[in-house]
Length: 122
Image (cartoon, rainbow, N blue to C red; front, side, top):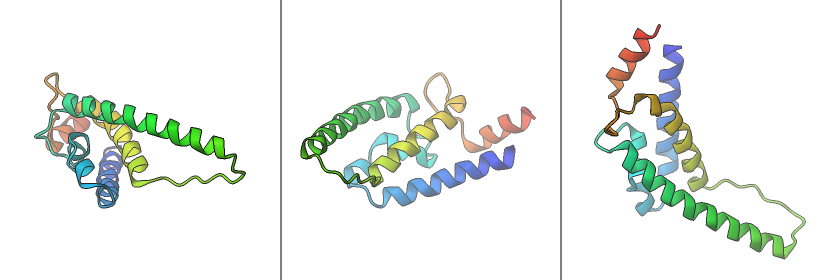
């Protein structure tokens, strides 16, 4: 359990770095993107709030694109995920995994503390 959890966190961090290379500079500097790289300097609640604002705009853009495609009546469907789509999915997974390790003030317990909690739960 412990090793699999660590491996999952490492894989998520690697995939985040790969996706971040294909993103606009403004998005790379967003709190909700930077906090996923185990940067404990950011507040989880502030990053979550910033993500919710971004996600709302993102969903509205997706709806507009879907309406445009529907109006064109194309018989061919294309399912291509952009780097932004993958980053959003990564944040949602990361958020669910890290939520138990967020303190009441929004700070995230460092990795060593998380490992201690996981080991004590065994």
